[in-house]
Length: 199
Image (cartoon, rainbow, N blue to C red; front, side):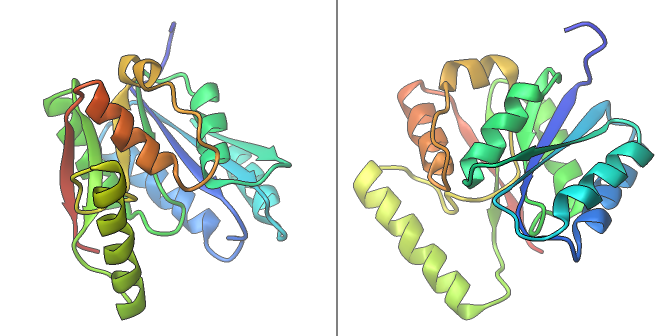
């Protein structure tokens, strides 16, 4: 694509008016400081607060930032919409709640070491015991049912090339989009490299 950035970073947003502006600005500041070629794409859906108005305001104030609003619901729906709008050679989805700027930048750098793989963040620390237990049960179930060997199925960020994205042909519009990515990557023999996330 002509004049396309290297990276398009997509993050779905739902009911996050209390912190979404800080998140977008922190991503923008970090990636600009480290001289990445990038765009940030927020996709607000199924929200009941002013998240979209805030995302739109930040998009009007900062270059390389865009905001979209969907009426439908679904974590995967937001990701897929953002990926369709993305202009980057390399694509990424992150969380607007649990991805820190340093982790995002590190995962993008790690991807550049080998653009043939998929980078997937793997959380090594969680803030609550019940969340840790829930993740353990979920990941173990996925390993048993779908035969995916990952320490953190829903780990983020996820980074991959546009060519890999086209091969994956992702369709799931809910939180199972992470499982779909891992399952299809395995079938297509695309390596998934986990990057430890400690925050």
